[in-house]
Image (tube, rainbow, N blue to C red; front, side, top):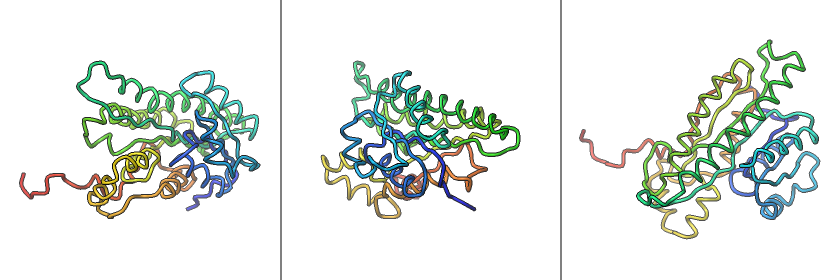
Length: 270
């Protein structure tokens, strides 16, 4: 089984910090061409400054909620590297809110960032992947045409009322993953997702900085008794993007150290 991604071209959104940045760095180290996309130009340049002059790295900034920005990102990728083989939809918005506040807009905001951006970009990139395969005469031979990796979270299946918008949007991202996987399977484009929990993402760092006690609480509630690293997520993304996962599509791989295996009511009574 090969997990090599050398020579492939990947778009990574949310690449300015946390998991998106870790994936972008890892993919460059593994020999891939990488387009690092983020909304915040200053944060992107500061976070990945060592890649600014790298021949296999391209920086792109813009609001991917805008359709024109999506088109421009794809055009910039093709201009720089001629093709796109991998899409990593790592950009995510994490917000807490009052679930009983009728004036709260966190559900709409979370769906816009965590679902619709990934959906619109996936649609645009998938069309390009299909066109590439057809131009190469590979679309009918079962050769891999591309891989799309979305992001979900254990919050999609574990309820915390303050995470209403985030939970709804990540659950929707998982269903989007399954639907796109079936729609794109005839074209040999695979679509999978990573659901993370107990992983040191940018949002978790911010939460722990504000609430230092969260670290111990998370570790106590995680069977592996530690917080996962962004590097471990990057390696999982590499597997799903590689030909080694060539028969894997429509799946949601959970990286949570076993956290979702626990019953919060630790009493053997049903």
